[in-house]
Length: 212
Image 1 (cartoon, rainbow, N blue to C red):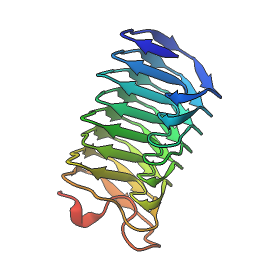
Image 2 (cartoon, rainbow, N blue to C red):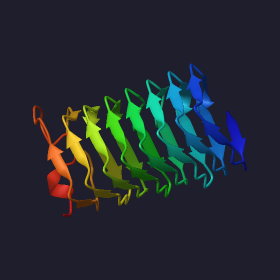
Image 3 (cartoon, one colour):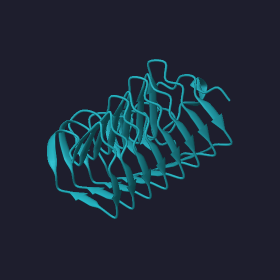
Image 4 (cartoon, one colour):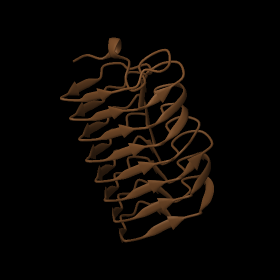
């Protein structure tokens, strides 16, 4: 689905097995669709946003949606946000993969808001669960479990002045071969790290870079 300057309402919809260059399941440009109980599964993008691509100040609202087994060659296997700020509640990202940001990639001043969401089993060379590049998402009661990065940021990777705020979030059993990631100006409120440190450095967030 391609939305341009539009705000469709979708309930109980499934996007499965679709492929394109950007936004395998859905591409939003200057659009704010409302999605409830929707599933994005086995979609792919040859560039960014295997499940969904949000661009040009798009602000979709997603409630109880699932992104599973989507892939992108470069950024954002589950969802890619560029200058956009979606709102997600009770959403799940599982087993998505990409070049960076297996579950979600936020770029260029994107500020998504996530509440009661879960990232599990996602993978990428950098930022298995989430990759933030010059972006500052707000996360509340979000769990990162069993995500994997070949290099850095098994749970989350932050760079280029990103300042995410995390409240009551959990990082558990995430894995990175080299390090937790370049975590800069992260505000953690009542968060927990339950990590298996089997490699070189912290798998969820590298503690020395975190401001508590």
